[in-house]
Length: 464
Picture 1 (cartoon, rainbow, N blue to C red):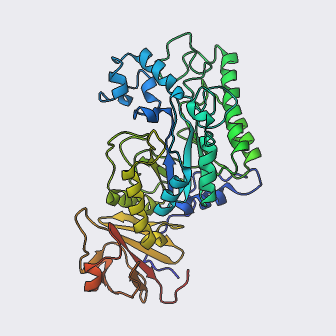
Picture 2: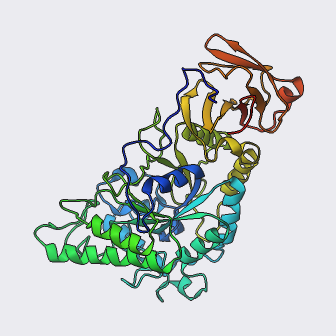
Picture 3: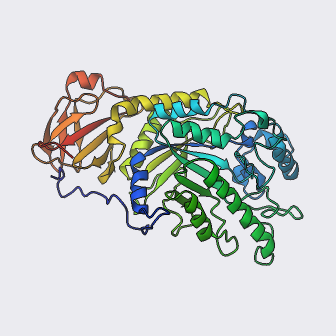
């Protein structure tokens, strides 16, 4: 039985833009994306040689991308803003990379404590340095010229995937299709001022084909030597036909031959290989008509930045609510320090998010969007016949009002209303097109959670 009046219409569980496909094992992509949508909250980790300088990952190598090189970028200014000197020294960072305190089990514990369900790791960013044991080239963490190569944890991607998989996480492999170290992408005999190949790929097809083979070789390594992979998260959206044809049909077929149920995210490209979309550092104003995930930094920067400006726990909880209320997943990024540990401030945020999730996760996991989604200080989700109403507390608001007045929403007559973490039934009544809930003084003065509380609405017969 529906709890909602005609003003409240659920968003379809699977938006209609992405056509269904049969995966490598004959299963349905739609079913797989339903599974993905159920998880809601994931951890993104950007970690690489760039972490040593605390600079923006990869992008300072691109001369025309001025936004990627703020004036306070220490490694850039120390080199007199000489791009060639910067590139040369950046590319030698593999020879000093030694994250002695790398402990992926600690990462996984922190993520699990936060209530996260999936993990996406940068196996290779645009700079071309592989954080896995690739045999397609020497620019890798396991090569003898990298001091960490002698460590038993040297295959960082493998170690991270294993630790998170053992902790029950779904696994996502971030991989950059562009590679600014490869001589078949940026030819060393000419300047490379932009993110694109510095030669005409149509005029030199043999060189470009060597790059295509290189990319396919690395992806096949990830699909065959690193256990079950749930998400192949491809970055570098400029790598697309006609001038940068990476032969995605063939790559996808190969990936699913080895990983039959893998979800592929050929991000920003569109089409059948972008199984879900990934808006970066932003949240859509309305629920989109496609499966989506907001990827966002906890601080200002994807990779580690000394004294980064971390979002408050309240901000992060509100972001999670906003995203989930609009039908999306939240992929929250943390950049490890050069020694491999998460910054203590980031760890504290994850722990505090987890404290909120312990009380309220029922309103997050396996839910779907329902109108009016997000209105004033209220957000809405549904799970079967149950509806959850979030009340988002202001930054200095540590107590609740004695009465919550929810606009544009009415439960069905006889519905039970309770507060997660304080499950006794609450008194409620209709008011105009909405309804109001009276909170006992003890609950208003001592809310069951900080940052936001959640009303649970169930019909009098119960069930889902």
